Length: 153
Image 1 (cartoon, helix red, strand yellow):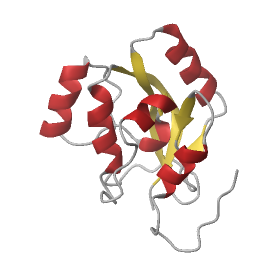
Image 2 (cartoon, helix red, strand yellow):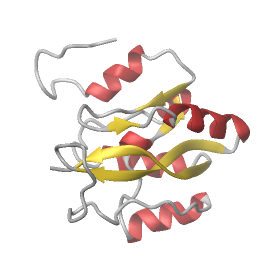
Image 3 (cartoon, helix red, strand yellow):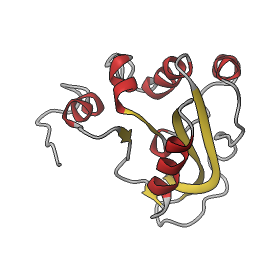
Image 4 (cartoon, one colour):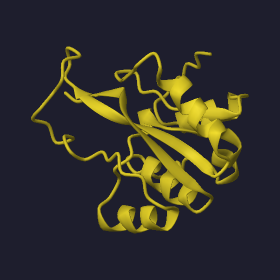
């Protein structure tokens, strides 16, 4: 469903979308990023395989404005594919920062909503804030395949 907003940031767009979502899981897509066709199926299989998984991410490929692999950007090497126990994620977020890309995520919709979704005051840090809160509920799993392409201009 397309929801047109008359004013940018008058409401938190992701929270508005969450309020309209009806599925068991939610995934987040930015307009300029790309999901490989097998992404959601692979993540759903992972999430269904173990109830301890609260969210699933994928490895990413950084691409340029033309959709080609981008080698020399600020984002190269930031995103991890290392799986860690939940307490180790918290330590990693505070020591290193965000290393889980929002467009690669899938999570239980009910958990995201129960945690209060995205904090509207966090324009740039809403995703890592959500990851910190989700890590308190269960385990993350990162698929090592680059099933998400993130465009960096």
